[in-house]
Length: 102
Image 1 (spheres, rainbow, N blue to C red):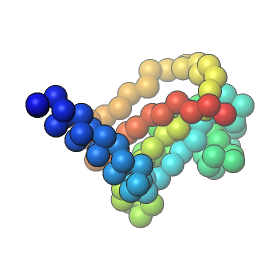
Image 2: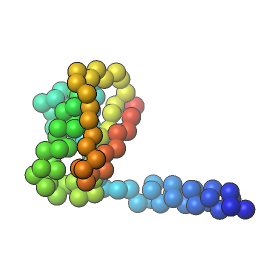
Image 3: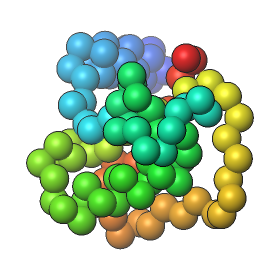
Image 4: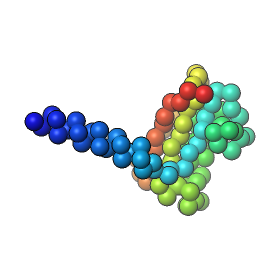
């Protein structure tokens, strides 16, 4: 009985997430992008590190576009990290990395 309730709750939660998407700030990254780009879906950044820097700068400036958090989308490909990628727990942001096909 409990399993069926959990399943129904899970399906309801998924429907609510799809129906009411969070309007978090999106930063897009692609291996074919350029770190001089704006980080939009049409003009993605090239590195995850630059996306993180952009997110931190938006936080530092208290930009209103991040009031619902930040989502960093990774388009398909291989990403080379030249330095460690650190996420600080004290940043009150939604750090969400999502892999997306191009």
